[in-house]
Length: 150
Image (tube, rainbow, N blue to C red; front, top):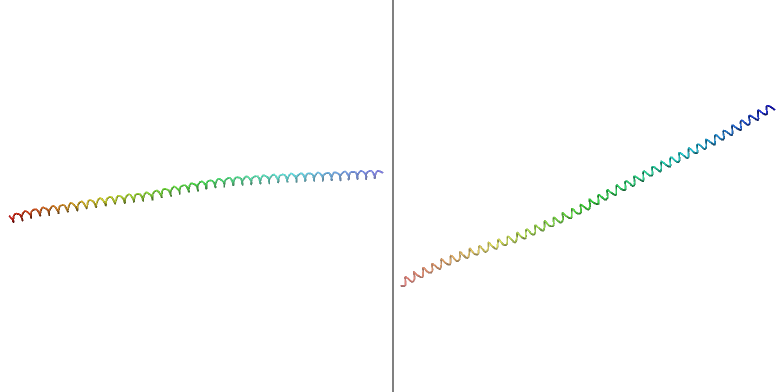
């Protein structure tokens, strides 16, 4: 009977050992599962962080592009305004040239008229001088004729 006690004790020891091994395996499985869950949670957190950074970069880049677009639009508007001002100044300068030319033309016409009048006046004075000389000559000739006739 002692042998059967020891066999029974060994069996109990084996069962206890098997139970402990099963419990250890269950605990290892729980730890592995917990580690796996923690690792998955860390990976999800890392992915979430990467997604958040990428979204922040996209938002930042969008804002940067928007500012660049607005700057370029302001530059374009300023260029259009500058061109319009230059066109206006060019048109005014061209008009001024035409006005100056017209005024110069009018001045030239006035000078030509004045010169013509002066030339006509000089010609008239010359004609008057010639007529006066002819008149004097005629009077002298008349006096000489009268003196001869007498």
